[in-house]
Length: 317
Image (cartoon, rainbow, N blue to C red; front, top):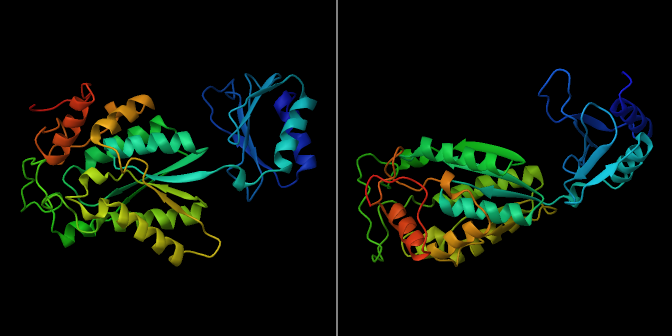
């Protein structure tokens, strides 16, 4: 220990809370600890308190995930007292945590924006399944997770869906058809029961993390083509979660945009400052969006009906 105020704060906290854990959030320069330290109690890891300063000296800027309020402490004593007050009531229950499924597309991005607004912390889950644009979608996911500073990030693969086949998104022998937005038939891009597989993984992760909400960007406008985008599917899966998890587990599926049109989704994204420019929706291409697959066509129509220009680039319009 040296003579910095932050070291004296740490020593005092350890005397009053022997089990306390602490660490530096980041280090950017050898002579400056970047001023961000965090303290937490085991079993209440999410309910941290952050102490920010320049070179380990007062005054300190203190903030928590519990509240958006920031407090400035001018002395070692007032800093210790504020941290101790926080730690004495620390609990993960104080900090709501949600899991959000993020494909990298526009719908999941807007759902992530809503999750970020409604929860103190959001863990973001990306699931690839051997689809044609797997790498581009993963890149978009990473951009979105970075934009929202996701609390946790998990990227997993269920490529067995590609081995099962039955979809033009995963089977190279099947062509991704041109958009036909008036059709009521199930398109070739339907991946059989994909969303159930994804929700099962999201539920497993949510139960481990202690999250209480799962967000998924399903849209009923797509439900004529994709049966696992219907509201009744999510109501049924909710019962599966209720039945198949631990008695003290309470996880709610939220589909915040399920009743919105694509134009309304675009407008909601703009309202929430969602990074729509970072998203990727095309089923065919990983460099420039094709503009003619179902996903591109729905997206372009949504922007047009909203009176806005899609910020991503297309091969053809």
